[in-house]
Image 1 (tube, one colour):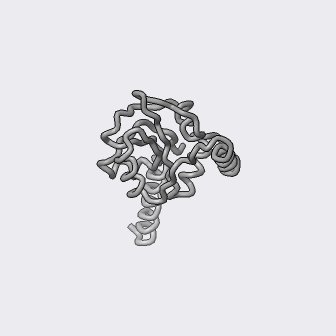
Image 2 (cartoon, rainbow, N blue to C red; image 1 turned 135 degrees about the vertical axis):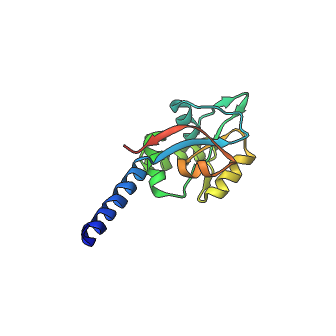
Image 3 (cartoon, one colour; image 1 turned 45 degrees about the vertical axis):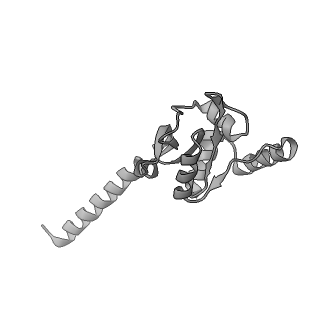
Length: 148
């Protein structure tokens, strides 16, 4: 086979494999591996991140924000709270000022988020599935979003 053709074929295979890997990208809802939480439906999850009280086993479920990745943040805003970033920030600020409801804690590193989840069994967050699978401290509750 011609060396140029062989090189082109290799490049095409690499590009195709990258496309397949990107197509499998998923955002998942997670909790600590020791958490008693099993699942939350979309409405409960939205309520948690908008500052409403959601209880399981008599405990208040808290949402922790994963701010490590801008793409992940955009997906969170679209699929979980269904708001623009500006509207979501205004909503949280309004609740804090009017009712004293604290904003969800934000973590910009997966390691810190995993540690926080481990110490708070009734807390949930979201992350890329690849990151969740790598951590023994995390369990996946459900898929929130997957790339088409």
